[in-house]
Image (cartoon, rainbow, N blue to C red; front, side, top):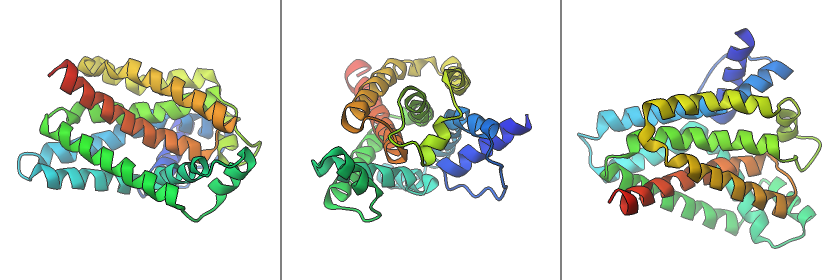
Length: 252
């Protein structure tokens, strides 16, 4: 139980900017429990978003609420995953050889491709969030979107090699195996039990993980922290887009 708690704290400290003034030891067991807790952290973030929506939706204009939600969404993660998104965009946009792409991702400066990709990412997220708030369907779907996006990282971490035999992604990967995926699935399974109407997101995220994993393997030959952060941002955008299409063309 103690290792489980420390692992959850590690996951919160790594994936969010929520201040937890607790020193959690990094061991094989705590790092494994941290990976297992990724989707649970997503559920917690989603629960906070839905709480804000539930409280404020009757009283504030949709546009203001949309901008507040997207701001909180970015703030809670400290822009960590957005940084990875921009680094990967700069690397891909360079059309450089593979080793040069890795160098570009390590560069702390953001290039034009990174800024443009950030603009479009936030613009599309804002559009989808606005549309889903207007349709009054975001409350339950956002829990799945944030949980599935982080479950996708667990899948990619387990199924794909890391690009380098060092670094944070390597440290996470070397302590996990396929069995840990089953633990990571538990929060998602519980959500499906209580919100079966969101089951349409399950096949959608299976498609996303297969396609994104194949793209990583083809383009970069392996994962790193920036690519895993991109998987979270891309996974969230994918979930919002699929939910919007579902209510617009299937339910509508």
